[in-house]
Length: 278
Image (cartoon, rainbow, N blue to C red; front, side, top):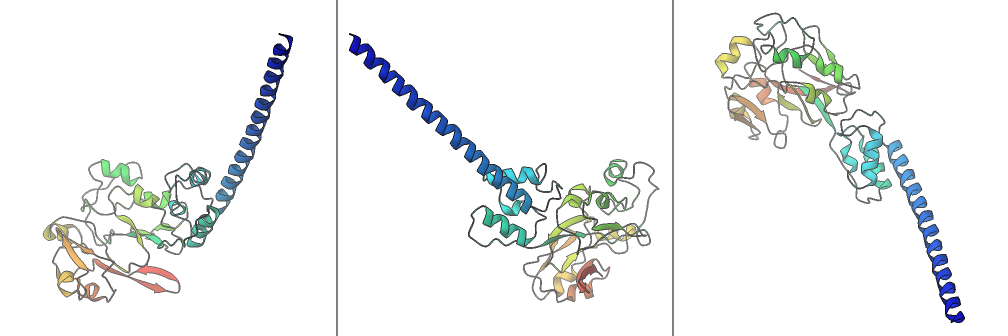
């Protein structure tokens, strides 16, 4: 009987010791794993641009780094990271394939500044395009065009957008990161983020018939279809009354720009490293 009790005590003690050993081992492993995860998150955070602009849809770079470490995001999730930064993020995550992303920039799709567009009334209120759009669509005659109150320039964290004296935003593409914050802030979709390599686009978003466009703006797309007919690459099509350029077909020959009767077709020219619309 005594031997049996002794055996039970010994077995219990042994099991307790084994349990304690594994518990200590698991705690140590958890700490090492947590430490490794923390180090990886810190590394990923340092590899990100550090602007904390929220363009990725998360609270900031640290939040994106955590998502990357958990496999809940990919390096391309950061819209403002350079190709070099994206590649470094991929390497830190153990991704061996080469990561490539086309550089994107914001473009202004409205040429109707105050001197060549009609205004129905003077807007007096909060200097915000979104607020003005809610108040009788603002004072501009074209209910599709830029309201010129500079909301896009104020939300840009990179100082890439300024307002011209005539009331239209101007994008410095050398500073633009294509984060999309200006695009999201524009209530009329006037600003669009597109591939920087797209050289030709329509600087108008009005879907109104040509006669109506002509009555309020000198440079809006009137849906005449000349651009469609003269394009040798079939890169332009009409979506209702509005011309649309297919960047995958367009060769930037400039014929549509030359033939457009209202100068609504725009081509981007590179001049001293700065891209400007003409």
